[in-house]
Length: 326
Image (cartoon, rainbow, N blue to C red):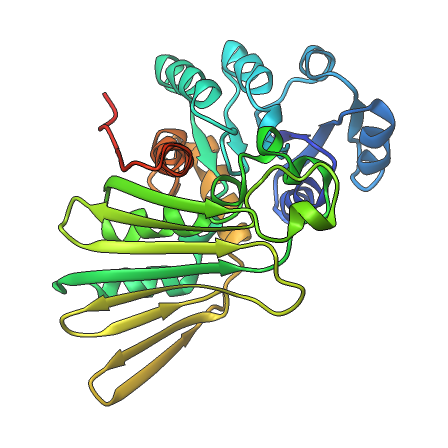
């Protein structure tokens, strides 16, 4: 059976996911919905038999789809997911789930009621180095983790607005928060401090902080700190370091370095995590077996909860406790 998949969004992520889907046997990119029909038509020409639409209702009324990939900015979530939930259409959605908790919580309720197959684009979970890190952390006592996402500010207009992106913690550094949860367990409390140092003076309409740091308490008893900056003019670094009683791990986009005593081992990322993510989702659609999906909507909601709590803490100047999902 050929799976007919739709794409919502016409940016880089939609194009990348579309190319991966088109390369899979028995999969057809059948429809693309954009902020304008013109944009959707332009991207649809890259795929055989794909049609472009300017409204999600037009797409869903016109094409019978087995699944949809949602690749839109954080502020645009809500109506799209509810339209798919209403029709019982499984979806893979790129992170983050929104700018706050309102839309994600409403969407989660609908997903749970329909028992819908979902996947969220936390592709760090699918890296070879992440799987290896989980092995190396078995039977270890983790004391601390330190993470950094240091770089420049993306040029798209909505990213620079707090109401558009949710800020760097929610939109970008969320990958490290999610990786921390995946490897070390749940977060129970956060305390954050942000500052505007440079970018609001260099560019108009910048309301996001350009530096921030978050201290986290974990249910295991371990502690962590995740910091970010989007004010750098060049260079930068993204990674998560984990310190245990038996080894130290350093995870980056390139792979994993383990240090144990005087011995050092390097494990490089070889597989394409986006391809692994897609194959797990397609397998679930075909078989109902969701065990290969490493980030469901419900799980990603917990990461969203932590990053939004960091924003709340930075605004109030007080620690924020993370309540368990009821």
